[in-house]
Length: 179
Image (cartoon, rainbow, N blue to C red; front, side):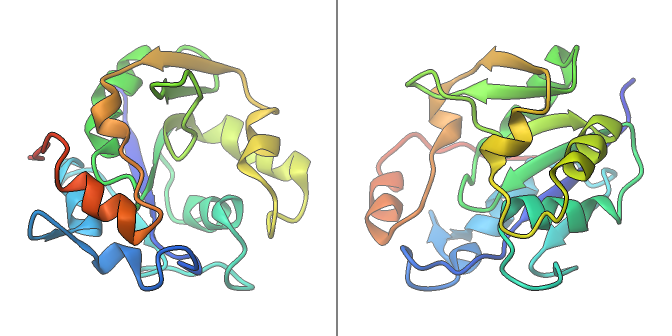
């Protein structure tokens, strides 16, 4: 059995969305609660932007991940973005698929989704160390330092809500429910 923990990224400037995405309602449930509903209660979960904050603030997802890694010590770490409310539903499939440094789902266009992945903690720490200061670093640069297992998944689980229009559209897409 693979031991894992989860880091949920819920901070950010929310410029395109206009307000706190984590509190936005999808089918009567906040985006944050959707993400959390797919993570078993016994899995240690750190919410960056609520439980802990990166210093300096607003350093981007790599800085958020670096901060979250200070709180977890399992062999595997799941990374979830709050604006992908159903992404965490894929964690069991990704955990089963990981052979190298990380397992990431491919979206409908064939792009890897690093903010919905399972990582080996040691590989993630090593990659962040190689990047140097994580503030402002890109996920693309981080991923270039990892050997990634690409996993084909149900693309409906990868709905990404960046704008109010995305939220409206998400209401008409298939509804997934967690635990």
